[in-house]
Amino acid sequence: MNKAVLIILMCAALAAAPAVASQPVLSVEATSDIVDGKPMVVFRVTNTTSKPVQISVGQLPWKNRNNTVIAVVNRKSGESAKPKFRIDDNFETGTVDIGAGQTVQGTVSLERYVVGLRELLQKDDALVFWHYAASGESSAAFGEQGGWFALSRIHSR
Image (cartoon, rainbow, N blue to C red; front, side):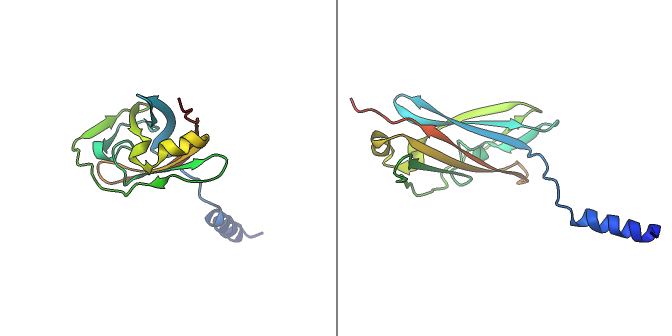
């Protein structure tokens, strides 16, 4: 086979190959906690790169409701808690520097996101689904991540 034809075929194959997804700049995890009897979400944001990154305080998932979505669903019935109206109410200024491989952590009440949470949790266990779209200080997109965790039923006393 002619070398030119072989090179053209190889280039065409490479161009048609799916792009390999790059590793996200930030890795985000969310777990549950109970603080003063209230269900909370604990977010951990880790810099996965070898260089420091800078993010606005107001862009952290526990600060800004406009870049973090949380939904709570009854585990058995599928009934969902009604979401609260989103208000851009975070006017915090400043930045957080996250060093290479370092993690920052923050907590937010689930009641900030949904109405009727206590009533839903008195019926049964729940599933909490979350999504976070991260962006840096220069508005560079750091990627979108999401996940879920289980939340135990609150037993009436």
